[in-house]
Amino acid sequence: MLSLPSRTDRDLYPALMSPVLCANYPADHKAFVRIDVSLRIYWHTLFDICPELLELSGPDGMSIFRPFMAWAGEKKLAFDWSYYLWVYVWLRQSPFKERLLADDKYLRSIMAASAARWAILDRGRDCGIVIGCADTKNLVIGWKCRSVRLGREIELIEPEEPLPAPPDIFGYFTLQSFELDIFPGWQSLAR
Amino acid sequence: MRLGFNFTLGDTYDMVQRLIAERHIDYCEFLIDNFFCVDPNELAKAFDCPIGLHIMYSKFLEADRPTLVDFAARLRDYIDALNPIYVSDHILRFSHEGRAFFHLGEIDYSTEYEFVRDKVLQWQEIVGQRIHFENYPSIMDGGREAPAFFERLMKETGAGVLFDASNAVCSNRNCGTPFEAWRNVIAGAQHFHVAGYRQSLIEPFISLDTHAEALAPDTMSFLENFRSVFDKPGATMTYERDDQIEFDDIVADLKLLRNLFGVAEERRHDLAVSA
Ligand SMILES: [Fe+2]
Ligand SMILES: [Fe+2]
Image 1 (tube, rainbow over the protein chains, first blue to last red):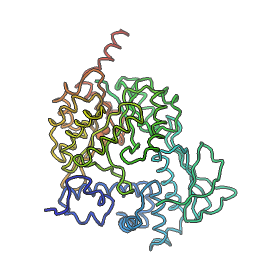
Image 2 (cartoon, each protein chain N blue to C red):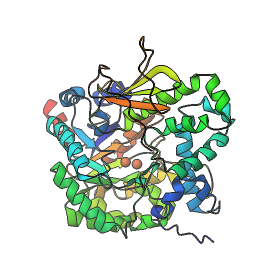
Image 3 (cartoon, each protein chain N blue to C red):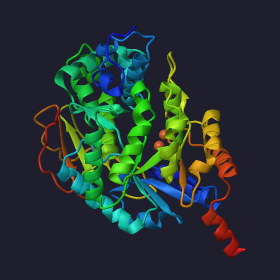
């Protein structure tokens, strides 16, 4: 018998993003399966797009996924387009730090994933986003879909004259046209 | 019944063109807010067929008014350029306490009715037209309250329901919502969705609205049993496919639907004129 309320999805909202709370539900109950479905999407959103991270964690990803989700819960991260960037922030202060920084493929993949997520999910008027990181001079740009035959586009830029490093690990700015012709300064990630 | 296909991003452009050319579909449904940076006139010329507009991320239950007004202003440009058969949106939760769901959440139909009704009235007023709201593929038992909720919502707001038949099948399998409970909603709806679903990986199995597989036998028999309630002048049914996009598989399902509903009246007229 389940003592926790589970009549509606709404009863489960907090658990839908928390592996810790999920564990309070008996595994043979529909509520557990429903929460599991939700958590799997967070998992796939991370590791299907950045499969390199599984090299750090091992194939089930759990040594990254569980502690990251718990940390994200404490920090009340919004899980917006910057989801991947926060994974990097977490990895950088985790036991994975050394291996993470030893190869820049992780950072490249993470920045591209967040740029793509912005390009697909943002509904503001901006056309593009530029993401910078204190650990690299390279920039990643995400462009929204600009033609009916195209999807979003992601660009890696290695600028000849690097921009100043963002004050935090990551910074970003958005572009009002399909042209990278401004540098209005870095914005910090919102939680 | 006119049949359509959902067009969500550029990569299926050529396939949709072929579906239209070979007359497997009669119209196309744009996930319109994915294209807000595409010129409305380019979009209007993209396909030579009628268009439906499906909104994914207005988040009209959660967004503040200025955000919605700005969203609607851009949407309006597409409504004006495309003259769509319908405009539709979703009743669901995108976040909880400011934190986003990646698998979107269902609302509580019994405690949130008044809240949703007011938001629906406001959203239709901002957009300046009737909107058709889609039902959720319920998992938890609260989903049994959905049919009465949508019936009342239509009555009290003038909104339409975009009735997703396979979402109702998931709801039937997951929480036992009887098909019969939807009869009035289906009768009052003109615009429909249908797609494949799959089971969860772990038990007790639940059915998930994945849009990645063939139409299931229980979806087909639901459509057969309620055929005359679904079909009506002006009715549309969009076949949704977001993954495992294989032309032949999609055509096979579209043929099942064509066999069930017959050639749309508008098309029959078309054929007679050109014959
Ligand atoms: Fe669906
Ligand atoms: Fe649908």
